[in-house]
Image 1 (cartoon, rainbow, N blue to C red):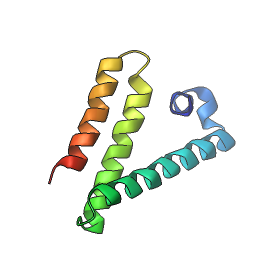
Image 2: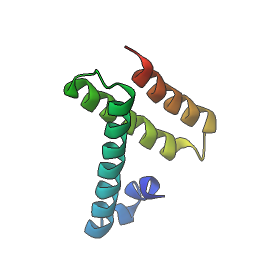
Image 3: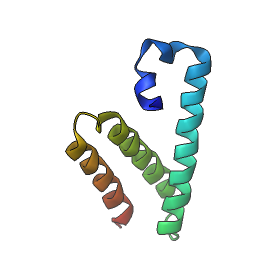
Length: 86
């Protein structure tokens, strides 16, 4: 819901925008921890790049799942493949 709100007029409200930014930061932190756990030997720059990419894939999936669940699933599959790739 927060992802869809970002594109709506209410997304320009500062309190709403701050909530969306905080959610995105929390998701990025979780992705960073997950990538670090999955790829303990990866450099911190690799972990950060993978976490940022995967965060973007997840947000994309959340935004498009109502209209294209298959494409949302592909976005999540791509994120998993990025983490698994060496």
